[in-house]
Length: 127
Image 1 (cartoon, rainbow, N blue to C red):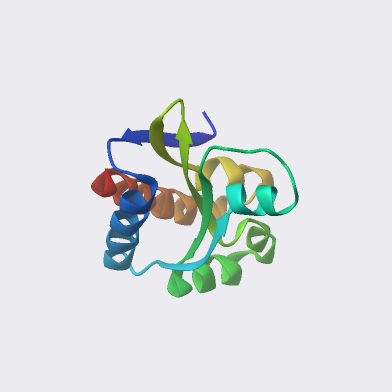
Image 2 (cartoon, one colour; image 1 turned 90 degrees about the vertical axis):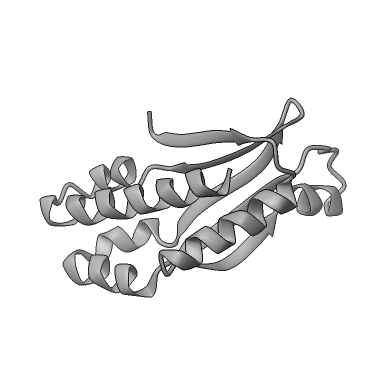
């Protein structure tokens, strides 16, 4: 699977708040939060389920991976989504290890695995 997704009983806003706290513990910050539902509705499209995309980054890790291979920058910042699906709140992300395979560089695979494990830990703590 290219992704990691969990379900929580929390609301979208509660899940994001909890996620932001766990990310801070790993020195990741939320650079930007994109509210897809609002943007689609703003453009006149009917979309009634909440869907948010968080772009997250740890500057030290971004520096480390870019120093090894600039092509890895195509996958920065990391994305975490929080959304409603059939009345349930889900939190998920594309796995950095799946994405980094496209770069085909062994030197960045261990970095991607470390980042992935830390982000999964943050997601799991937030549910």
